[in-house]
Image 1 (tube, rainbow, N blue to C red):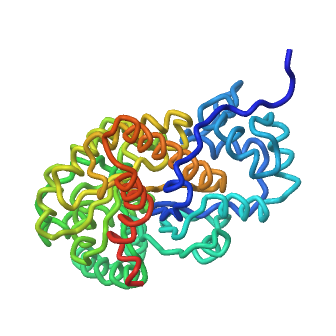
Image 2: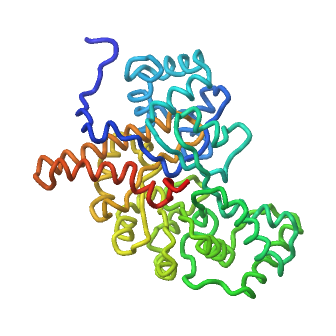
Amino acid sequence: MTLGYTLCRVPPLLPCVETLRLVDHHCHGVAYRDLDRSRFESMLTEADTVSPGITLFDSQIGLAVRRWCAPVLGLPAHAPADDYLARRADLGSGEVNRRFLRAAGASALCLDTGFAPGSILPPAEMGALAGAEAYEVVRLEQVAEEVALDAPGAEGFADAFRTRLGERAARAVGLKSIAAYRVGLALPGERPSEADVAAAAGRWLASIEAGAPPRLADVTLQAFLVWCGADLGLPIQFHVGYGDADVDLHRCDPLLLTDLLRALTPTGTPVMLLHNYPYHRQAGYLAQVFPHVFVDVGLATHNVGHRARALIAETLELAPFGKFLFSSDAFGLPELYHLGSMLFRQGLSDFLRSGLDDGAWTEDDAERIARLVGVENARRVYRLDER
């Protein structure tokens, strides 16, 4: 019997993929405090809690951590979970964050700041650790909830929101909607009237005054936020599909956005469909038929582990190569930056190598596709070169 650690045989990355300085177009800050095992494992799942009697190290993402993250900490690949966590604790959160953010090989980070508890690093510090440009993506619901707490009154809500959003967006590269978590994606295609917005705002503000939390969950107001974003001309990200237990997955199929996407087409506003699993093929279809729709596979990449190869290939069955972007959706754990990058590179490399082996495209084609999906699409859509 052989003891110890054994490396899996993994095909080497194509050079055109390995050398990419990726643009991570949707991600979050990481924790700057040391984490115990319970807290660490809780960040490996979208569940609210880890089920009793199991460990997240016995999952696709847990095995991927041991395979791809252990070497970054100076351990053999597949090191046991206890060894991994002990090494992580010895190094401390600062060094762990630096190693994984640098290992991801990103040139730019577009950071969603809408969910940023006090223990999460802000964009400037994230960029410094990663050796990358750092940009902000503003969450629409967060702005609306801030405005609501200022008690603008039902008739004044719309103008107060537009003003506040304009101020926040002035230093941002994009906006984000989490309508999927609040009301689902079946948003109306037409722009809500001022009267409808005032009526919906009145109901919402009255509920806050009665003691309800300022959590926006109104279809009319969600649509209003999106149209305000479109008026600013910035890309609008939508959470789609897979998420935590707060989401009703059957209401998160991107096809439910079809009416809104048709209505937004004349504006030219880029719509960025995030994550998409298990609806990634539907998202690929939308990216093909609508000129302003773009897709990624986001947090699904690291959650499905070695199956990320299939996920990427399935998304690219229909999505044009100029419409597919990289994102990690990393949050809390710096490992997720590295995992998202590594598994994306491996999946993209395998996809391109398969096409080369079949004669479906040339090496020049493969290099161009790699640059598009890893870097150039994001830089173009978010106009990063104009910053």
